[in-house]
Image 1 (cartoon, rainbow, N blue to C red):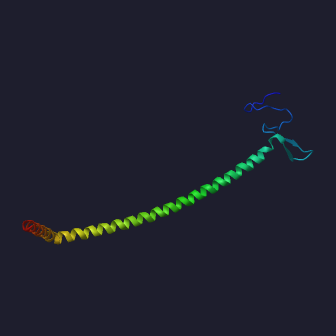
Image 2 (image 1 turned 60 degrees about the vertical axis):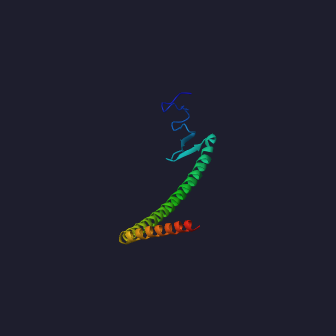
Length: 131
């Protein structure tokens, strides 16, 4: 058996159109048609190719589902971000109003708290003296 110069593949010498994958061609009688013969040993390749094709279709479906899920999560995150922006704006407005009210009426509240504390202290002091 002689060796072919193509990547160490054996040369079978049966015909000039022999391939290393078990396929061979032979010319038809007087026409330009080529007949293709598949070696039975390599007939399993079709089954393997079919199995790979099914797995590729399955992976394609999984990838599409992942894409759909990712879009859904992105929409949810966008809605959540908009809700947080609105809540942050509401808190900022309320803080501004609260600061304005404290600035306008803050000293009166401090005076009231101090007066209440002194009054409470006086009542507790008087009750402790009486008993």
